[in-house]
Length: 345
Image 1 (tube, rainbow, N blue to C red):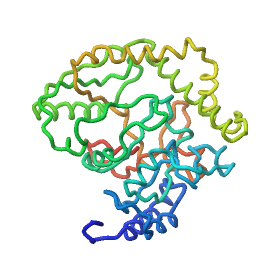
Image 2: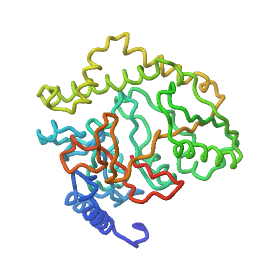
Image 3: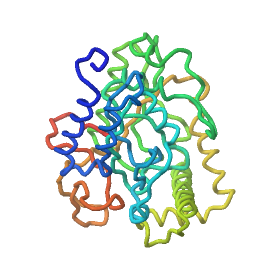
Image 4: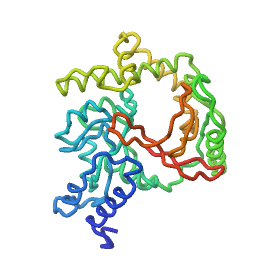
C-alpha cells in the first residue's frame, strides 16, 4: 500500500499509535512507547526504501534491544536503574534495514523465556507469507553466533505455496515422561492438525523422539533453564556494576539462579547428551516433520478467576504495576465452543 501510494509511513504509524492508546490501558502490553521517535523516523528521509518501509512494529523487551531505548527484560532491578541500551542488537539493525519503524517495547515476564540459548528470535505475523518475507531479510549468521542454520536453497518466500511433496510426519500428544495430563481441547487441536495433514496427502502417524521418554529429560531441561537464569543475573550484575541480590528479583528467578549456580561442569554437560537422545529415532531421516501440543491447557480468559496450585484464588489479568510483576496473558473474552483461543508470543 505504501509503494502504490495508498497510504504513507506516517499514516501507518499514526494508526498504530491510535490503536495502542485505545487498547493498552487494559492490556498493559506496550510498556515503553516510542511514539515520537517513530513519527520522526516515518517523516524522515532516513527511512530506508526497503520491502517493509514504514511498517510499524513493536519489539518485545527481551534480548532484542534498540539504541537509545529502555531495556529491562521484565526486571524491576533494571527499571529502577532506568537502564537504557546505547546500541541496536544485530537483529534490531536488520529490522531497521528492512524498513520497520519501532513504535514501542512490549511487556515480558522477568527474564522472559531465556533458556541458555534455546530461545528463538523472529516475528509474530498474521501469515506464513509475511513471516517468510521477513525471514529472507533477517536470516543468516552474525558475528559471535555459536552456530547457525544452513542457508536455504532458495528464498523462504518462494517456499510459500510450493508443493512440498508427500511428507512423513509424526505427532505426539503426551507430555514428556508423562509428567502431566493434557486437556481434551489441546489434544483435539493436535489431532485436528494431524487429520488435516493426512487429508493433504501426507503420511501421518503417532511418533515421538525416544529421548522424550527419558526419565532424566525434565531434570536436564531444568538444568538448562536454571543455568540460563544464573548466567543472566551474573551478566547484568557485571554490566550494571551492581550485584543483584534476592531482593532485586522475583522469588522464582532467584530460586532458579541459585539452582544454576550450584551446578558442576559434569551436571551442565548432561543436557547436551539429552538433546542428542531427543533426536534419536528422528535424526536418521525417518520423519520430515512433527506436531505436538504447544500448551497442555487452554489459556485463562482475561479477568477470569481460578485456583492456583497452592489453593489460593487468583485472577487472570494484565498487571498495572512495573514489568517485574507482569506476565504475558492472551486476551480471550469470548471463546466459541470447540475452538482453542489464539496464542500470542
